[in-house]
Length: 495
Image (cartoon, rainbow, N blue to C red):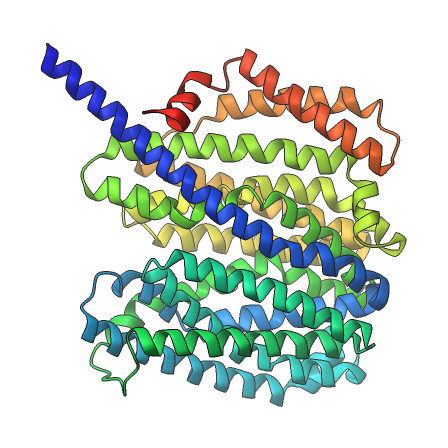
């Protein structure tokens, strides 16, 4: 009996240690993530006021295009690097990393060349006219620098050099803020922002290359393992493209059917909403896949399910007040962040906020499918939701503009999450805490609706109402036992 009690105590300690380590990693990456978001909070007001909706729309189109192109240019190799490089011996790591770096740069250079060839047509249709071709042409070099930077920073993630990785991201954020500010003050607008981002990318690339060269070095790679990397990585490319359709495709249709001004208004409101809600899930997903996979590989399926269930609930539970704060009280904050020219974008906030509370749960479903080696279903649900998004955008944007785009996004992401949840539940024993989440949403709706009657559309009122509503939300949730106070104390203070 005593032995059993000791084993139970040991298990409780182990679980508490796992959760505490996870929370500590979240705290580290949350602080880094907040530091990175400072760039956006500093630059967005200046960009919106100096550049106006039209030029903001052009920059957003260029940023979105180069971002997706940079990911596609990776030809799935980064995913294969994450899968095969951890734990490999030094010689294998050096060869495969050098091979991956060479392949990525080559593919990015070829894709950039293709975009330059068709830049005139693309500028006319999707970037506000042929007069903006110079912005697109220069901006396309971000495909190469962005791709190379990503692969180099991946080294620090694979090697678990978290402090250097965090430091480089912070350097990128603050250096980027300073350089962009200089170009904006000098009056270079879109072209200045593009050149500033290229300069900052090159700085991070230079620092990373020196560190990696001193740490492991580079070599002329042998290509005998190339097939293995391609077979694993290439199937991930369609998912990258489909993810782009879900999240960015609507901007191109807005540019085609409406105007670049509407693209700018939509993009800013959309980005600010996702930007704020994303504060919660971003640090959670840095280490969660590794922890759950480790538990699963050790045969601790129940512990893995428990860990996933608790994390799922707390992620959504914390996202709800963030989203509701912005939905009910966020208009003065949005206007403060940008300018009155963008205030019409506030009408899309409720749709986008709800859509992304749902969307940020999608990695949970993907992780479960990965654990059961059923990743093909991920492609199927993305195909269904992306096709829905395209049809809905074509139907709604010409008539309803940015509101139509936001509604299309919400419906498409609901389809994605519903299908993913059903499939993950059918192939596993995992059950989502949906009842508790609906209770939390109901509490939040009641609290924020009541407090909204005292809201006066000022920044001071925004701060006071937000704080009071948030406190009430947590207190009522604890009363209804949605929060296990004793468990939280044990995780945070267990000795």
